[in-house]
Amino acid sequence: MAQVLVTGGAGFVGAHLTARFLGMGHRVLCVDNFLTGSRANLTEYLSDDRLEVIEHDVTAPFTWPESIDVVVHLASPASPRDYLRFPIETLGAGSLGTFHLLDAAVSAGARFVMASTSEVYGDPAVHPQPETYWGNVNPIGPRSVYDEAKRFSEAMTTAYRRHRDADAGIVRIFNCFGPKMRTHDGRAVPTFIRQALAGEPLTVAGDGSQTRSLCYVDDIVEGIARFTESGHGGPVNLGNPDEVSMLELAEEIIAITGSTSSVEFVERPADDPERRLPDIAVARNALGWEPKVTRAEGLARAIEWFRNHP
Image (cartoon, rainbow, N blue to C red; front, side):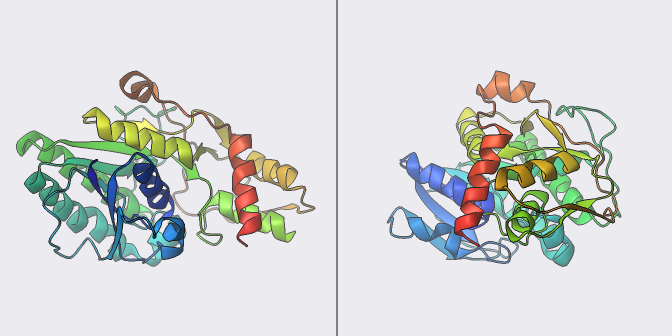
């Protein structure tokens, strides 16, 4: 039984990953400052004595348990609405937070996993995006507080691996969705589902032709778990190589919910990527991983969860 430290463990992906590690028989230390995470995401696991929840901001120094075997760094606002509301906090989590956690991992001899993002590719000029692509990021644009925080985190993780012999690696998560997302976090899937269930117009940015690849959360946490055990340095893309436009996504959600909602086109945000699609050859070859849950099945599960958690 390993002891796993998960930062951002009360967030959307973090709570699912916490559940996955508990299911594997591990002890989990969940660290979260609850800026965007919620204790409610962990309610069903709080009675498990293998879970400890600590309220703490990773940008501040902290004495970590010496017996840590694995550190997974997820702490950061992740939706555009959140990181635009909390730009300094987002940059801090990716810089000071990563520094503190890498030091803790090295001191404990623990495996360190940096949860990065497809946002490091910016508005990509290469399609689909392999890990070798350096990206097309506006370093002073509104999204830069998240993009550059994650890019800096990757650089620091790589430096510790090269120069301090850290067992450290990077996963890049593409557009994850599923239960426990907040209905008003601003991302397309929860926004469209909330609007469809309320019979409101689904607000599609621009003309809706921009694309994303949506990966169900169970598949993402399975990929992270495999990466954690692999010793691989990464970066490794984790996402679904199934591209969908935002207009198509809105229409699919209307159909699955049986909603009478229409589509309403709204202004597109600055620096909104035109296309986003992962090349997952590395994940297939190195981890034996690829997504199993189809978009239709994942949306049906997410919609059912939102119906029961209005």
